[in-house]
Amino acid sequence: MAYYVLYTNHKGEYIMERIMSSRNLTQLTDFYQLTMMQGYFFAKDVNETVVFDAFYRTNPDGNGYAVSCGLDQLIDYIKNLHYSAADIEYLRKTGFFREEFLEYLANFRFTGDIWALPEGTVMFPREPFIKVIAPIMEAQLIETAMLNIMNHQSLIATKASRVTHAARPDGVMEFGLRRAQGPDAGIYGARAAMVGGCVGTSNILAGEMFDVPILGTHAHSWIMSFPDELTAFRTYAELYPDACILLVDTYDTLKSGVPHAIQVFQEMREKGIKSKRYGIRLDSGDLAYLSKRAKEMLDAAGFEDAVISASNDLDEFLIQSLKNQGATINSWGVGTAMITSKNCPAFGGVYKLAAILDKETGEFIPKIKLSENAEKITNPGNKTLYRIYGKDNHKIIADLICLADEKFDESQSLLLFDPIQTWKKTHLAPGTYTMRELLVPVFKNGECVYESPSVMGIREYCNQEKETLWDETRRLRYPHEVHVDLSDALWKMKNELLEKLQGN
Image (cartoon, helix red, strand yellow):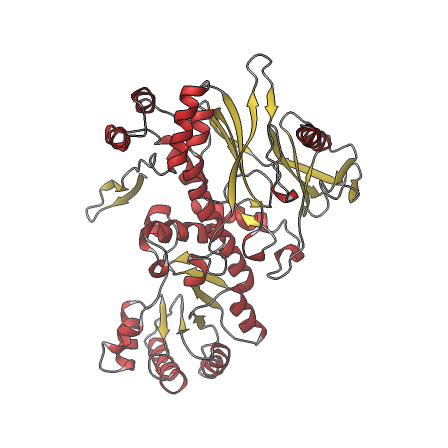
């Protein structure tokens, strides 16, 4: 993927530098996608237009919601979708593919339409976060890479939203690069963590690629490399007076680290150095106890505004527990648990066929997947998604999946009902609610019509999105469920299909 940085050199000249090459990820797919495509090529009309929906069935980590993330990388993937001569030769050597099909692939481009939730949107199970309308060959090919990109970043963004919620109002720094499952997971995991609410990352490449704040202090090795702790602290303070966060647990936190940090801060004050950000970092031991004692020592020395930062295998539950214990920590560094989504390492996004275009009538023929598990029965047809808010508080009431051509009037009453337990109904009076269509056009006829915001812009949008959730939905354990309902027209279509198929 191509990223550019504009900067001035030491001569004051403007330089535009490419920092990462474009990546052709066309072959990032499952083998059965190509075997199906070859089957379509010889057995069907390759231009048969279909509708596919990407959605997920269960919120990760027992959360009350998920955060959509990864659309910008999906856009880049679609733009660069093509088979190189080397790709074609590799497929030829496998012996599975006929020459006519390989000739088709040699000229392959995406020509369809894609709708998606903007990145940073909060979303819920069973509702489409991406809709694809395209020739069946094209819609089939993009499944694997799409899910790979969106599943990973949505998982990490959701985890980060949980961690940052537990830490509020304090900031959380992402610093899990060394524990991520490879460079891509570290880079795009850092991006997703920023979208989910982190204030910065330790990952310099992610900072450069996505123009997000980079943060960090120093390691124990810095302290150990000097003759003594005090010399190490003084040297660091001289180098970084405006960002002087000192790691105090290398030898003895309360008897050595904190007293030496205070001594350095006093020396800086005597020299007239006013640091923009200074304080200590704790990386081991009983963080609640140590932070409270350290705070007492810092306050007694006149450094009431000193930052007390903590790390050491933190996650949302430990952060919440430490806060409940009265820990005086006001800055958090979270690594492994967030970058790997340790408690829930996978996001269950799926991609299902929903409709096929009838060329004679110009109408979409709905398709449905059956299952003995009601939650796994898909929603048929060409659909869109509306979010319904309380007009007085702008909190989410419910989401409504409906057919793409349905229209609603906020000045009229609206009946919502559970699509499975249909006796559960909610009547919304006229003028008491507002509605917003969530899916936005991203590609039209193969051309990108969407401009992605900056990562920091997406982060701000995500923060606004999370404010539309009730506190009960943001609980870390046993959150309130946001209802995802079907319109009456879609519900009737679905049940008519079910009755027809069961009758066969």
